[in-house]
Image: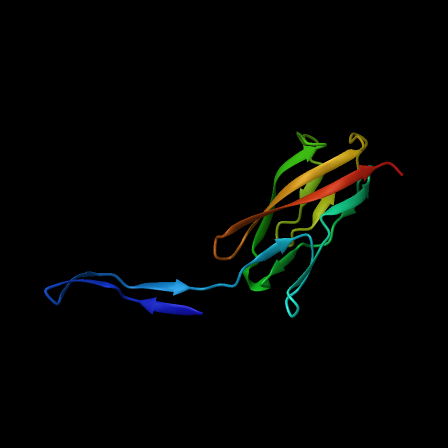
Length: 139
């Protein structure tokens, strides 16, 4: 839904200045790992997952509603057990256009909870963030 507006500054009934602009209203964007059912406005959050420590895994894509505003995703930061984690071996990755988080096969990670902060940039330029915790365990 959009509106074209042209406010004007009047002096003695004559326009002194005016500028046209468009106002676009978009619905509240939902962004999280899990599922969203818009017909019921119901969310199921799946933002705490158990993964094998050796890696080679991939999450499902995050919920992003309305889908036509979905654009790109990136990992902003990673914490392990509450402390910043430097992913020098690039074990954690993200598929930029879907938001699916991946882990490469490795032998360097230690067991713990890895909290990833994910940023989504919508087609309108809005930036949204969410977290995804991967409990990495050896099986």
